[in-house]
Image (cartoon, rainbow, N blue to C red; front, side, top):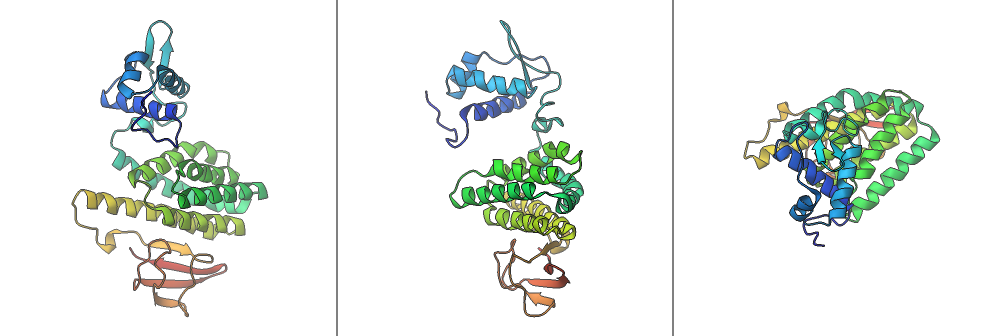
Length: 294
């Protein structure tokens, strides 16, 4: 069976399920609307009927479709409520969704990281390290790392010791997925650098560092996403005053200039710094605290 246009590194049924969700959006199907037959969908998507059937089962388990035997597959009353409790898959403005998800994450996830630094068990930290190492391996070998990225953030939420934090995972994982797709998986070194900073802060049990490292991660993502989309749309770049300053404790990132105070960036790998860019350093129990403007 022809499967052109599909990613061989991801399960085919998962990709077909996503295409069916895209079809529901494009055709503006409402609650109770019927999908084409499995045979018609298989022909349209260039896959076997058995693959379509598996994809429909996935969507049924996510409460997006309901299957009535002998009648067909229908859109449910509240699509996505099970796996996507906020119905984010069905928000059509993906660019605004990416920004708004990052905004919400900026409110809650730095605090979650701070709690994780206080409460993470050795098992939690070992799992984060394993996920980071897998993420690094996949990135260095040009492979998809999205699953490990989402699991890394879910593990931090669970490690916080807060019963509610893991229930917020759909917001976090949806944001990771939308952002990664929106940037076409181009921010690879930045992904490793910022995740490493969060991991090291939690390992050290430093809640202030963990909060700041997560803030950096999310703020950097937001502003880079904004810059990319302004460039694609032909809009002029934002002035520095319109961009949020970034903060990062740099114990494991790069050596600072010789003295604290105002300095000049000299290692551009660290989270997007440019040679000659002005930076400001502050003392911190675990190293130095760096602030710079984009």
